[in-house]
View 1 (cartoon, rainbow, N blue to C red):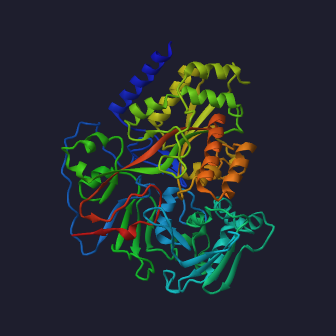
View 2: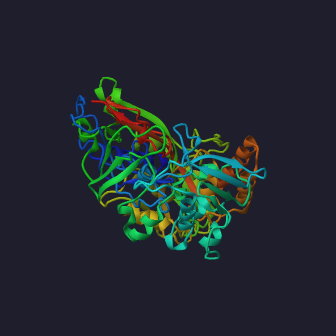
View 3: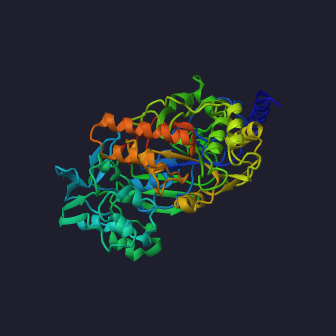
Length: 573
């Protein structure tokens, strides 16, 4: 059968599936790692947000006002909009968006990101940088308290860093985000008892020394691994200390019932500005239709899924006036594990990249909600450039590359792993495996797993059991280092493909030390082109956010990456 006939076959199948139902697996990503259940910009799903009826069959319905209440309560779908449980509430362990959404509200660090994604003072009121750009001296505010009222001091920061770097904590992010600090790697590798690069000068002054001058260091310190935790809380609470976390952030955890609800209440002693204006935030977890809840007045915000996008975008619908569409600094990838056959052969990886028509996946399955990705860095990320040699769809060349590989005529069994709860796999995964079957003659089985298990396996790339899988990365801070170095440097704990290229590593090293911003970005662009040529990953989509928000909710922001944002929100009667 010709390529066009093969494409028509899977297209008709996918269209039929979309019309009948949108059942399927959750698609994911990271933030660090992010999981996008119900996302408009990623894999479609009907668990959680989204209508259970066929698309386009329901007439536009007016939205209802919030029920009157003595409290100013904000009601949201859980996590990043999909309603899933957070894998952790421990800042040292949080490497995914579902966890970070809550952690960023309960805890805080020396510095933070504002609504414009700029690094700003937080627990630290100011800092000074040495002439060699390797020593940072932070002055802490004297009015910062833990939720229980105990004052925060420089000793708390040192404890928090050393706890994150303690091998017993099993942090998958400490090396990546704190490893520039002298002594962190030694403590992680059991070569030191403390982190000598963190020096307590006095109760409100802490000095941090890093191994080399790096322009992105301050941005890294906004990541949860650098948040301050209470030693008494952690050590007295044992393994369940996060059931009652004693943080410093604008909100406190009041209640968490797994798969039902997570409730935050405002911290009356919060030191920052603005102060929280809402008294309580109810995150709804588990099943049910978040869109139905939104339309019934039981939610104040909801993420729009592919099921409802057409009617929400209809200008005659009342919902259209409540729609926000905005970018996200995230890229969805297909990752091929270079340590697992047949993906240890670059020609096989290149063949797979050429055999998938990503444009058709976006147009037919995703209904153009996300954008087709042609690069690792998403648009809007500093340093982003459209690659000169874009990934393309070329089945003939793909077949030729496969025939030139060491697996020609003997491709082993391949399993594609994705997040899901059983039943039919997500439509994009079905479509892409069908393309690979038609264009390359390879049979691929689909295996679903839960999010916590999936991300836990990826935390150690050297032991990653998955051959090929789909995952996304959402920026932690606005610097290309957060994508390029974290995801593709040899030995990085977030290098999911176990990719290694010494030339790429050298370019990343040069970029890290380069003072001139323009020169830095050019070095990252060179590294990106080499990575795309080696094809350890296939860029699939750039996510876009689609959210509905009630008119009485003021100040709600949907930033392109995760920041503490609930303190900006108010609810009118």
